[in-house]
Image 1 (tube, rainbow, N blue to C red):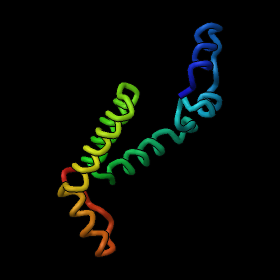
Image 2 (image 1 turned 90 degrees about the horizontal axis):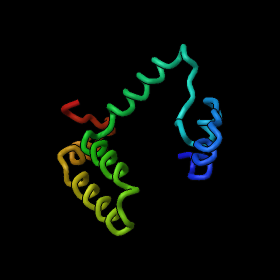
Image 3 (image 1 turned 45 degrees about the vertical axis):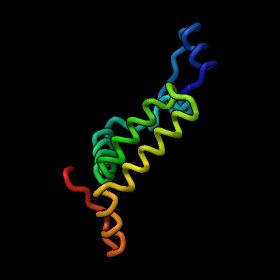
Image 4 (image 1 turned 120 degrees about the horizontal axis):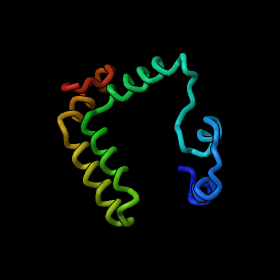
Length: 109
């Protein structure tokens, strides 16, 4: 997130920024060379695929609403997400695999 002041400056002046500056300002998460883009995208997708689908869904839902909720409502949403994730079959399976020193495996991916 660039912040209000930087966004306002860009809107008012029409100033363009390059990829490195966008990364430094937090507008983009990562800058990758064009010839490495596909490899990096696949690596990110593979990392996401290792996560619990339920946890990913809740993370997207709660973070997507973060700026629309007051502090109390945000904490309630986080608590609901944690309760759902910690009581899920995904979590129980991950705990079982952890005790056997195996990586988590989330069915349905």
